[in-house]
Image (cartoon, rainbow, N blue to C red; front, side):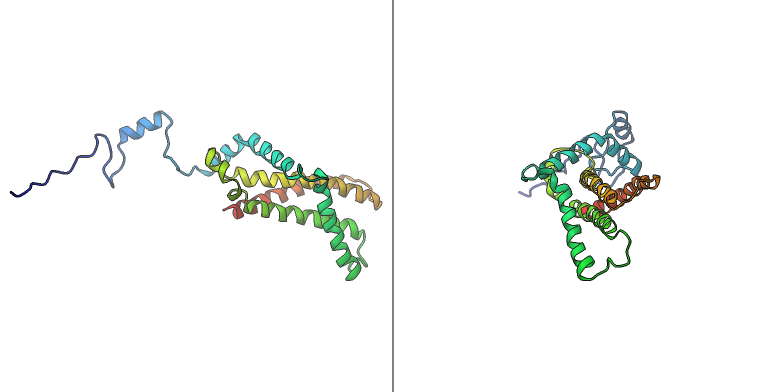
Length: 207
């Protein structure tokens, strides 16, 4: 006997058909209860607000990472200052003594140390940004938070390291006879702008 084909099962009541717009009543119900589309990208202002709401998480995460980074080292957090100073010493041996570029440059050592410290700050921020998300996949998968929190935290960690180095730089400047003036306060907006620039680079590299 010829077999008859059963009619296709109908879609559940209330479910929108494929390729059609969602039911206005369901959309109104979701909006009334604060429901949003899963995985929807928020607006820029909303995303910035979410970052600001998690500012305590960002600062705590940066502090914990900074402490854990040097907890196993014998010299501890001394490496925060020793590393850029050793880099400055290498640059001084190469450019100051071997090549002789220190001739005719006033206060060559403070000039060199300042450049090495800022360059190290930018380099470390970019390098940390490249692995800020890929190196913390467990945290990303376990918690829901703006992913930009991670590169911002790593840049904040590098900024904290730079502040230790700035203390050493002040000692070097005083040792070379530099008298503190009000112009030294311009370092605050300069470092702030440098931090914002490094954070942007870290976010780009984090992708």
